[in-house]
Length: 79
Image (tube, rainbow, N blue to C red; front, top):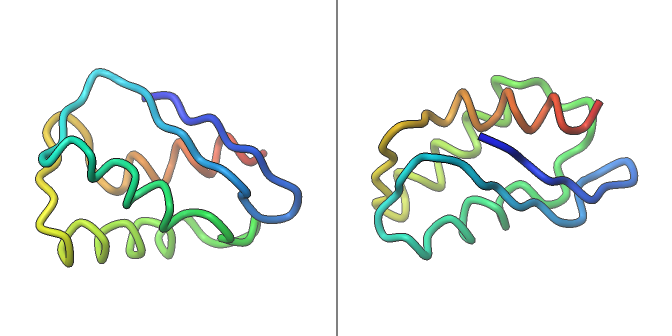
């Protein structure tokens, strides 16, 4: 999983690429949009919870990656 983050003190743009699947495929944009504006110092578990909320509310199915992994990689990208 790779995450490209354009940010100042908060993400302005987030793009994820990896060898994982999600259904529906276009829902990756919903997850990316949910991460825009998250403060750089936001705890990883809070980010994961936000992603989990989007996944649950949109009925997204993740295969090969978890919300926790996405949150971890995002935090690493914002260092």
